[in-house]
Length: 375
Image (cartoon, rainbow, N blue to C red; front, side, top):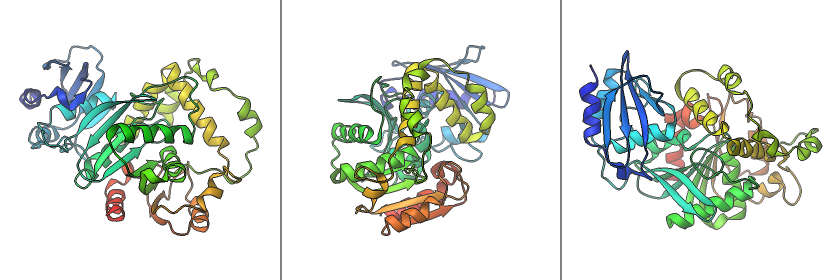
């Protein structure tokens, strides 16, 4: 029972107000062969022996990491990182456990808050104080992909990581257009509800495309942009475009056996595996599948040129922007950088030895560059 007292000390400082609405869930707490379950609800938390009941989330790590969590002096992120605690399954629930047991009462504490907007409820994770920094995830991702950003930028910014509609724990409307302009309207509505007039915006992949759209069509709400492997309209001919236009996202509401395929394609450990858990959690629902396929369709059909073309409009961009590219990115090849340099010469660029998710794969280098740029 090496960690029994440690996890009980976390439970003793449980604060359900760090999560709104409060989470009712079972969280498996593991270290080696030892496992306990934390039963959370709006009134409190109980630590019991793990008894074979499937948990909603799993938090596991070595004894030292659990002790760092208990001795974190109000820092919900103290035990994360290399050699620390790892989160699996429902990351919203896992993060709720960290936030509610951190013992942090400061204004900048990690908190999970669902914000009601005119487009429906949006799930957010927020941390830090200072200038607002809106963080927008990529296709198939959730706000959990910005946990490193919440941890590393919270000392200088109020970081607001959001689940886009259709993903994570946010509303999943049917018939929504799920294109960049729709998401821009949703993000400005979120800023309105949070009382934020202007924000810096960081976006990864699809989130980068949304950040660009915010600057192009709601520029008065945006200060500076950090674009992490942003999805850009393809410049090559899209020969399948006529067929893709005919495909309807509703077809994807039929269950598909994708779990084994996805897990074979993605590493089975670390943040990549946790990200797969989040993707499958949304994709398991008909509305989640609809949203995913609608967004994927819109990314493929994104026009590069013409009056509404992304690259044509990018020539008129005036917002200070930092593009971060992964030299091993297979989804958004670094070759896009030279096209941005030609079209938007005022932008800054950073190349990192990583793939498609720099804030997770190279968190120190990415956030050092972000902090310097945004300061």
